[in-house]
Length: 183
Image 1 (spheres, rainbow, N blue to C red):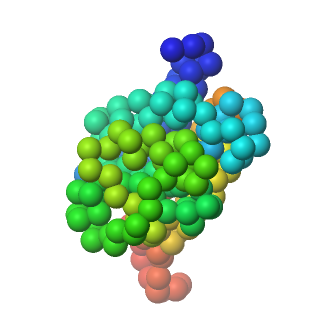
Image 2 (spheres, rainbow, N blue to C red):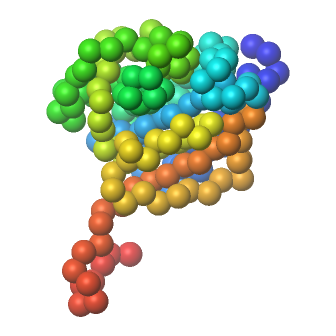
């Protein structure tokens, strides 16, 4: 593994540790990942998908899954409507409807393609409502988060050349001025 890949992994670990300090994720949660490997390597989103970047980052995401038990959902690119690659067991556990698509580098992106190839029983779904997520390279994961997303700030602002944002979600506050809410 080259030095750039090691740095990407280090930056991602810091981001994921930051997320873990803000929300406890486990097997009852879904974590959405949007990643432009093109942006990571310094190119324009959707132009130069990098299998090396996807592989390096995927290793860290699998460590995160092993440590937390969270279900991973890898968002594909706009060419397949930002559909998500998940394990079949995740689809069953969360009652998610499978769609017919297989991501590849030119329609799905390097990251979701790599995930699809690595998962033991991958399926693609069109919609989820994730509990938290990370967006590497401004891929717009918001459509796959629960309704009240809360930004998480990190000391790490980029992975490689890709801008990074992170979010957790919380239940809606309802009831108005008379309502009381837990801390």
